[in-house]
Length: 597
Image 1 (tube, rainbow, N blue to C red):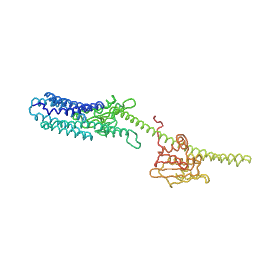
Image 2: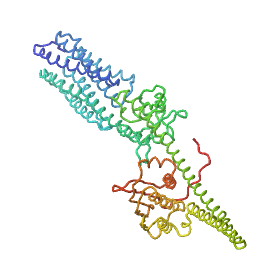
Image 3: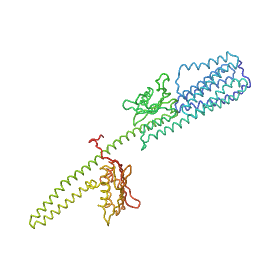
Image 4: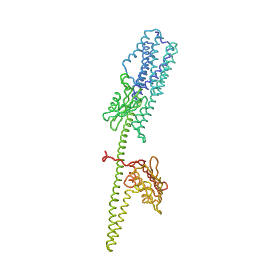
């Protein structure tokens, strides 16, 4: 084949030098990305563009010297560049491992370039196989990005697909443009456009992954905050949110406690804690727990793994406690790892946040358990307190009061049989005994509201309100339905004691003159509201609720029954006390005598 360089072809030099400068810029860009993020495919792209730079160096040298050896190496490096770009794209999109058989493909440019340069005289027959090879390889690279786009919906990959598809078509026009002498300089300029498009596409991939990764991990961080009213645990929310990462089909949490095992999963990993996980997932989690740094590994070849256990990649992030790795967050998918350009420092910080969230969740569960235990103990104490009051009431009412009544009768009999000189002393004794009986009756009335047993809740509350009324100094208005059902005996006692304490406070401490009492009920519960026009609650009421006292006792009673107590001052003066109790409230539950600490 005639290799003489004609004078018009020397005009290619300026275009070739320009393309070489652009190519070296791409080498620098990809090398910088590789150094910054440590991802293998950035290094492969840098290598591919470096080989492309060697190709341009070879053609420039050929244009200067006309030596066939440089045209040979130009052809070889052109094929190697296409293969290197294809390999980088496959590693990026699918993390395909290296196979020794791929060396045979790399020999094709070397062998055919020798045949084309030194053994063939026809330009078209020499160029056509290499052009077809370049076009097919470039189209294959476009297909790799197209497949990746279909898996993860990536606009940047879509852009690279279009650029590479057009470049593959452009390779086909080389024999015709070169044969017509129209290649220089427009062929170089078109290649420069495609190279710039590739550089932009790689940058778009980086920015896209940064945006997607940061948004998803930020959302993951949001799931690590406790949300009142949500039945879903933080772990469940975190694993569910991890499925939103690009290409992720399953996520699972592996903890080191108990020898190390998966404790919860989502997506395709939902059954790992129960049916076992793929070996590569368990191995990755163990490695991360030992090394303390994120890892991404590729599964074996699809055909060598059990059905349903193959995944294109397995990524594991360490979950960090205070001083050590406590587990790993493992995600699997069919495209590539979702943490493409998120460096280890960010992922380690996220792992610390996950560990802190898990610790907080354990603490929250422990506190909830302790709270339930305390509530049961409180309910039991209130219940026992009421039982003790009932016991004292029975002893005072049935024994002590009866003894005093009998003593009063005996004093009357003695008074009838004694002389007149003993009458004043006996009368004084009878008076003292009568006062004792009244005192005992007052105490028993406070210990056990007999009106509840005799009349029922609503009449007993009305009677209590009338007992506190004073026509001149203190008035009570009472609004309630005729009957109220669905409440246990403990709940009725709690409402009675609440009204008793509220009226007593209004008289003794609030300097109130008018009190409004309203008792209501609906399908969910009953509420009692007491509003007075006194001085209101003092500023230290909240502190009093945490100490012993009448209001503290009411709060304990209501809380033990699953109700709510609200205290507030009215804007125009006075105090408001509200109690809500659920219907169907039952007696306080029995609890063990000892509670674990």
